[in-house]
Image (tube, rainbow, N blue to C red; front, side, top):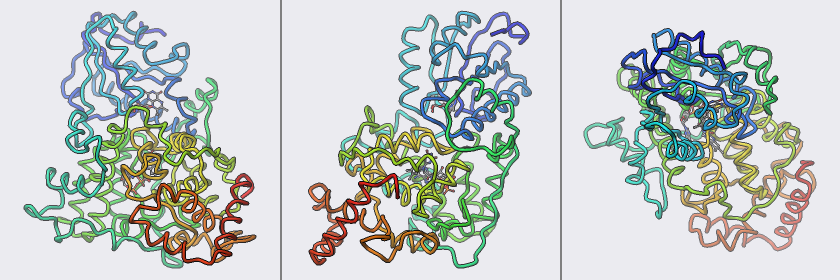
Length: 520
Ligand code: FAD
Ligand code: DLZ
């Protein structure tokens, strides 16, 4: 590593670390320019390999980090950007920091609080034995400061979105008229569950062309293990604030008017429908959640461009779910990733890495995840997640897959969605019942079933939709754990009312599928 040609100050008063998901140009750190403060942004092997990341995800993070460093330099801040070439011999952030501090001899060191438990602990223990004063500051991104999370979610209670969301709506004064929600209703979810009409074409997703040729070469040179594909050297994801704002703008103009209506819809021909695809921009902090919320609010109040159902439906995702999920993450530590309420032990089937399955909904959801590093929420929850849940896949394996494959996957948001919401691995702290379903729901919300190898109307036997029998097998085998759940009582009654012969056939079919998961 050669710092000589960087024209660094002779005396560095403070060295400040910026992580790959801390690209917030409006952080108070940048309000003043001080040539004695040096920022460090680094491509680090450990971060690129703690999960088997999608190639597009690593490219997007590195490109966004590089572009952010350039923007800071242009704004006359002192920045050191280190590539994988520079950091190859350092196995972790701590080792790299020790080296940098020895070389640059700053008087103090500071970092923004990491969103991940793992990295937060690593930096905390490193700072306790560091040879200089170390300060950890807020990332100024979330609507609830980390220390205040316990005031919103108490560790030993059940956690429900609705109370949390209403409280934040009031506190942040979002979609409120005085003390009352606009439209006298807090939640418009019931109006928002429609499948796409036949021949209906949503606008095409807005794609960018970010050149990642050199980054790809570095990833290959340093043998970073990746999954998924990247077609050529142009990355479609937004890699700077300007592109992130354009994506948000496009969403508000073209997609928001139908966001809520088709939020749960899935289609053979569309990969993002009316979804915003802003999660990467939000999670890297190129966008602030409040600016997104205020823009959507304005589309309702000022521009009269959308109905309250669409505006509320979208704002609930960001003000509600995103903040709630983060609170669940911190309140579920330590050992969150080891939770396994159903003691599910099966390995993730091979087709999760190829999309090569005859279940059309699964092949579409996994296929687009591999080609675009993206699937929308219902695909993640009710297709791939639901399959893993009812097939009894080990939740840790499911967690590792989700943590790697999506462009937006960072543990603080991925783990609660995967472990608590999708796999019910915490036994219902977040969800009042497991998110599970048979083929009927998939058929209702998509056009996948009509071209599927399996028949969604067949409940058991050869060629029947695997979701149908696996769903009942799941409920049947976990009756001791779920039978008393009042939200499932009608479903269990329906199951018990079935003829013993039919039940036997369903269980037999499910067992056949469970024994042949790799061949579905
Ligand atoms: P939109 O549908 O347009 O929603 C707008 C925004 O709302 C999103 O960008 C996101 O910031 C927020 N949001 C919506 N739902 C959630 C939610 N359940 N939790 C947190 N924020 C939400 N989201 C991630 O950002 N990273 C992940 O690693 C991730 N892993 C998931 C794993 C599983 C098993 C499931 C079921 C969901 C996961 N989600 C994750 C939540 C959600 O699926 C994605 O945020 C969303 O699909 C991103 O696409 P979008 O930007 O087009 O979202
Ligand atoms: C996701 C990611 C990747 C792939 N690479 C890096 C990296 O090389 N350097 C870095 O600072 N951050 C990276 N990140 C984002 C981090 O994983 C993220 O900052 C932590 O998980 C904390 O949320």
